[in-house]
Image (cartoon, rainbow, N blue to C red; front, side, top):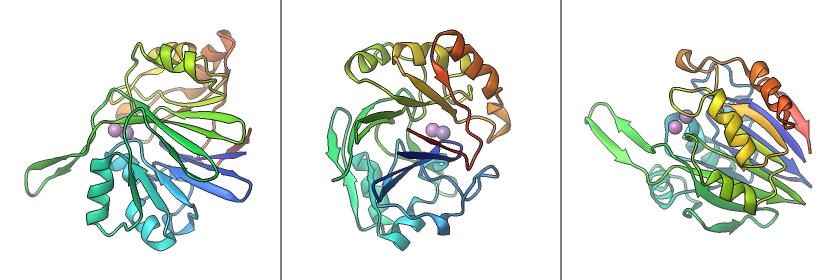
Length: 230
Ligand code: NI
Ligand code: MN
């Protein structure tokens, strides 16, 4: 499997001629390693309804016909914006993409759009994490989350080969809590995400990876555009 980090919390997974992308926030992300017009994917998976995760979903889905998977509220909201092929699933459920399976798990965060002109918040369901099982690999994208005790349960029940964990602090876990998260999840390898994109979330990812190494966990820092092979 080829795993490509495209910046912020956006990752692309490819194997056996299939591909999916998670949280494609590219336009407006100065660190993004791709343009939305370059993205080809069969599925777009969304962890929650914040702009730095939904990002370019509508444009990519309209151009490619990719099926968009997220919470029912998010699926409905995107449907109203012209995304024809959506799947609204919820926490605890598993959806079969045909070539991989996606299980939705909890995250502790929020999820919604702020309509500035109308002074309204559009609530978009629970924030989530996603466990993707594909060709013998188990990958967790934790979404945006704080540390929570049931990460131990998730780790006990899923053999996580690779975890994408936010380390930015301020909106999510910081490096210290993300280190505990990696231990509780029993992740074999961790790629830190959700840092340096905005000024409140500046972090030293290499220092975080070093602390992972001291705990016997492989920490891999990917620059936007870099890939790793599983
Ligand atoms: Ni968020
Ligand atoms: Mn975010």
